[in-house]
Image (tube, rainbow, N blue to C red; front, side, top):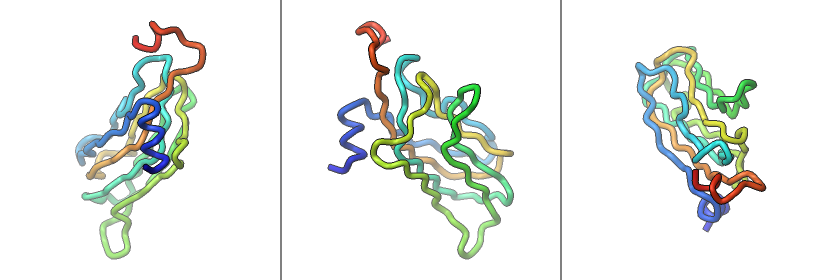
Length: 135
């Protein structure tokens, strides 16, 4: 078993697939922790582009006041040599979002279409009560 799956099984697997529709600009709370006492760890984001949109930008970030940006891709017109798959890989340990923060997906303007696969797990913060674990 690889390190990605090992941590997902030890903690709580939060991996998810999301369709990106050409007419939708933002996906607020695309991935959310169980509650305000848990932290999401993003291990890998795989963006599969089916519909390109020249100059449009797609960004993956948490929803804190000073957003933690995980990755940005600026798209170009479809053609030979244009990336259809973009991978942001943070390793098995992953990159933590803020405690209780969600992962948002935003576009500079609607236009890019395809799908996103997110490998992630969530951990409770240290020192929380049993009631906070299941809330």
